[in-house]
Amino acid sequence: MEGFGALHKASVANGALPSKTKELIALGIAITVQCEGCITYHVHDALKGGATSEEIMETIGVAICMGGGPALVYGCEAMEVLDQFNTVEN
Image (cartoon, rainbow, N blue to C red; front, top):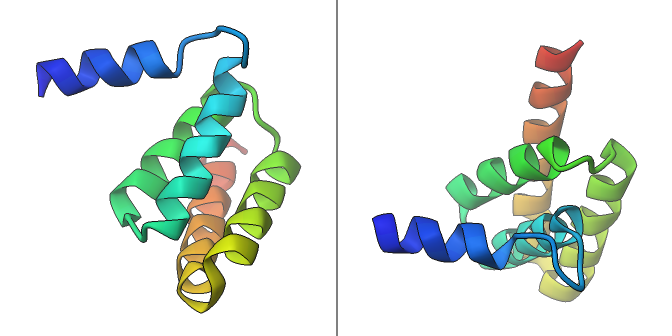
């Protein structure tokens, strides 16, 4: 686990792409591969990295476009997670 944590930290660090963008990419992938835990994790980290709800919603839309029907189900889950985090924040 320690090694994976280090890999994740390095892969989402600011570089040519800002960390926020990398988290949005990770969220899109999480939706298309149907990983519920990953969706929650990357919505959280995208918000923490400065992503807006609108940016997250657009990411969900692209993931649904690329992943079809199954991604629609998991995109809806991502929207629910976003709503929960936004409710906690407010």
